[in-house]
Image (cartoon, rainbow, N blue to C red; front, side, top):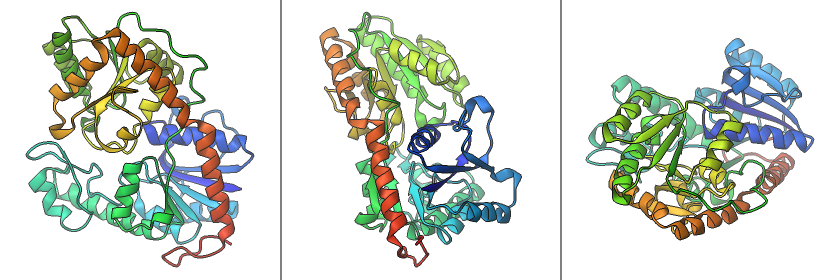
Amino acid sequence: MRIAVVGANQGIVGGAETYITRFLAAFLARGHQIAFAFELASQPERAADQGMESVVRWDLSAMTRVAFLDRLAAFDPDIVFLQGAHDASLDLELTGRFCTVLFAHAFYGTCATGWRVHRIPQHQICTRRFGAACLPMNYLRGCGARSPIQLLNLYANQRSRAKVLEGLAATVVASEYMRQVYLEHGILDSEVHVLPYPAEGIPDPAPPPPSQSCNRVLFLGRLTSGKGCARAVQATARCQRALGRTLYLTVAGEGPELARCQQLAVRLGVQAEFVGWVGPDQRLELLRKADVLIVPSLWPEPFGIVGIEAASVGLPAVAYAAGGIVDWLRPGQTGELADSTGFRPRSLAAALERALRDAAHHRHLQLGAWRMAHEFGTDRHFSRLEKLFFELSKRGDRSSSGAVTRP
């Protein structure tokens, strides 16, 4: 098959780009012809397509829309695999011309601000259906947009994305939570496919060795308000007081919350090391050295791929019970869940304490995480996705919007 991947970033920024890297490698290995179009180019060492010489690349910032569409038509894709371009008008145009499949890495077309969470009077997951009522609700409940212009731009883009949903041949999501979101927004059950994110490679062939300290906490992700690194610092401070011993927090990532988190660690007496952005090898080394992964996201994560990466080396996780995280974080088995009501630091600290207080229980979590990772193999995910692509490319009918999928 000829498959064109269209997304926002060439570089690895978060889970979506990590997924693109694995997709490109897997489908090239299966003998497919791959093209990759992106809106923002990247430094070579951070590119999702690094070292993949056979991939056809299109930097959308360096060409007109017409030129890109002409090159894409010449490539003649069986499937256009959308990863959520910043400019929703691009995705909308593609759905009218090609057989398109979306991987909804986040709340594509289902939330005005993209967070699906209220912040007033406290952090609370939103359960509303996306629509015009989201405009006043943004200010009544603090949904994330600060200025009216910002809100209107976000809303208009999501309205365009909602139209994209109507013309898709299929929508792929990573969790049961995300499936329910799209069903609630009118997507047919037969057109939403749950394919959990794949772990990198395969889990370690042998269980991890028992931890020697149970004192090392790892945060791995972007330093933005929604990812909750400040909560990780606060929870670590509370937990070490409860345990009566020092915990060591490693923060791997970059973003606008860096300075705030550094200052908070000093003020709360947390021994924290901020190592910045890390590549795959250093990432794996950090996972192996840690005793627990903390995932303090202040929104309903669509899945939380970092948890599966950690589990593949036998590292248990602690997180709020929200979104797709509950698909893989099984309390008392693969990690510990915190009550997501208000997304409070003390509930996260209590979960962290449960994971680290007792060495025997921590060992139980290590083994449980390692066993669970076997459920999220790369080959299983991409085999199912490949089967879906073959079925759609041979269907030869029209999507629900009337757009030609592809004969």
